Image 1 (cartoon, rainbow, N blue to C red):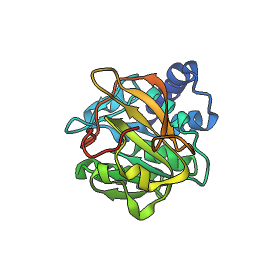
Image 2 (cartoon, helix red, strand yellow):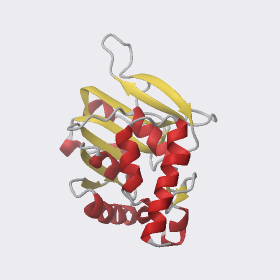
Image 3 (cartoon, rainbow, N blue to C red):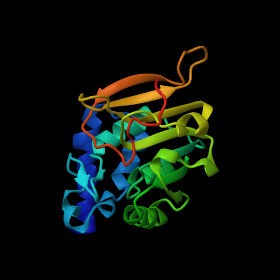
Length: 222
């Protein structure tokens, strides 16, 4: 598929998948019309880059379907100038999306192969993204505190680092799976006087895979 056909596929993705599904942030729609998602997937899957489905990357990791990414980023209520940590940044698509929304982005990835692809993608599309390779369960303390911590995948519970690395008025967004139920998108904030570290608001159900290491052990409850 040549560049013109990829551009057409991006427009169809926005007009047929995102706009009819209550993606109302015009900034997100405009960026996703131009951000070349095909460079974030395996070469043999590039023709499916704009299909309404998640695509396999490596070692059980996936690039989330476009609509899920758009819904989660919109739920994060990104504000230009904020600092965001993208946990499980994989091949860089969501990190680049936040950067083009004029946020200061730290991308954390544990898989060296995915991180290499993501760094190359961001170098071309969003060169201000700062990449760190390490355990997703540890966060990225060097650039903390963050106004937003965004999990680009599913977790079983919030890891401890969120309490240490999120700013006082910050927000956490991602997908949470508890027990055998479907993962649910959530937004979490601190709330004065609340008995637990964060108050969670659940938004919608979605299919997603757990990020590496994101299991209940050694994490606080909420």
